Length: 455
Image (tube, rainbow, N blue to C red; front, side, top):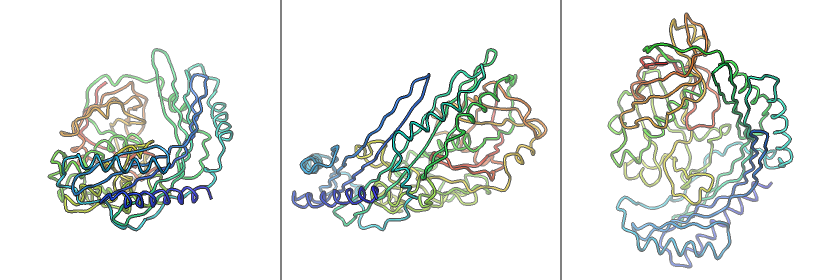
């Protein structure tokens, strides 16, 4: 199997890095080796572009006492590997000491690996082009209101290995197949957009993502202005809810910023920060999820970590650097920045934050409100929010007015203002309709009180 050959190659290179480190009298070293195949096909404005290639490289960290150096190289050539180790060693000897550094990951046991699909590995570019042709065909509907649909499909497969002179030698492999669609429609003096997508560890049926995006965009034409500023409940479907809370928790759960005393939640450990019905955990162990890895980017075992229980903040997320400083150890949350992960140092990030579903579905939640605003899709401006205070103001371009338990009509873009941290306590409903999302946080429908809406 191709993936097992790649795994063997990665582990062989990792083991070679340890040998060279010993030969070069390097005191302590960590090698991160990656090999990924990437195929991507994009369609926009009648033009199709295809990109197909392999990313492979090595990132070396060397420690001389508490002095740490980092160097990288593309490819797996022996001479390049030796030179990279030497360069990292030189950089370490000329770097200032970091008293917080306590060493690289020692021997670790790999956890669960995501389901691997050989059909993705064997999928030829010509087959992907055929899939794109089908998506283009289904998206070419006879409706003058459709301005266009941008489409993208792709695959990624491969893996990485981590080796340290402390005894760690582990690897993790993955396969991914995905498709996205972005539709633009125009009505009388108005414009509407919408997304559709599918992604998974196994080969996906991508049919329908184009028509789904187009239908959503068309549905939002004929919108009316809200015409006032009101404070009424907001209902966020799973995608929009995920976008809302991903911003909050990606920053707020970072244990590194807790250690550095610049985290807005750093004084809230073991305190109630959310509605008592709110449960949140970080899980990199579900083999059916895109987030599943056997080890993190430093070689620590990936695990499931309880974050919020009954509304009480129980844990932050850590890597092998900040965890020992905090006194908690690593939670298996070291990440590196794609697509050239070997060129970046580890950072802290969630594997997959998952909100425990409630008991009511979307229709049941909507039916329970006399007045509310229902929000779909991707609100704009989330990244410009104040992560220290939690204050935010975003624009929802796909919003609907809810009256007497029913969606009445689409709204022109509305501004939604509130506070992320207050919203956790103002949660009225957590829905039952969780869907698999390729985002840091996986949510179901959320109903939240006390947001200010204007438009």
